[in-house]
Image 1 (tube, helix red, strand yellow):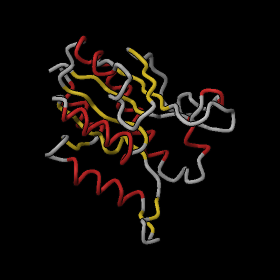
Image 2 (spheres, helix red, strand yellow):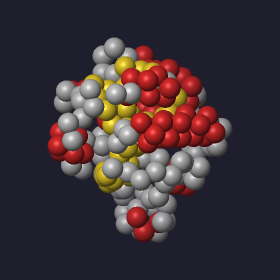
Image 3 (cartoon, helix red, strand yellow):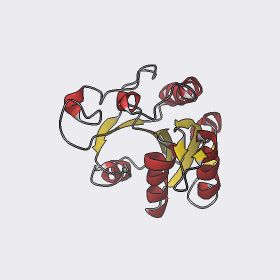
Length: 186
C-alpha cells in the first residue's frame, strides 16, 4: 500500500506561545527526524503542513507576518512532495490535501507533528473517517502540559497516553516512528 508521511505544524510559531517548553522537544525531534530521514531514504513522499490563523499581524506567531510560520529549529531538512497551509485543526479541511492523497494513490498516511491531541489527532480521525489507513507515530508528536477545566494539571505524558488510547484500533494504528517506517517499506 502506498504510504506518505504528513508532518503537521512542526513550526517555530509554538516557541512563541506561553505554554511552550523545551522539555520534550529533544525526544520529539529525534523521533520526527528519524521518521523524515527514513521516509526520504525509502522514497516515501513527505508532506509539510503549516498552521496559519488569527490576525495577520507581526505579534501573532501563527500569522505569516510574524516570520514564525517556518520549520521548527532542529527539524531535519527535507524537500516536501507538497506543502499545505491549514486554518483549521484537521489538515484535511480546505487545504486540498485530500485531493493530493487521492491523485497520488495514497492508501496509508503516517501522522506526525505538533500538537498530539489537537491537529495531529484531529487529522488522524478525519483521515480515518475518509477511508485512509492511519499510522499515528506517537513519539513523533509533541504536546505540552495543560490545565483541566477543574484547575488540575494534565501533564503532556498523560495527554499522549489519552490520545493513544482513544485512537488505537479505532481511528489509527498507534505506533512508534520506527514501527511506522517498517510498515511504510514497499
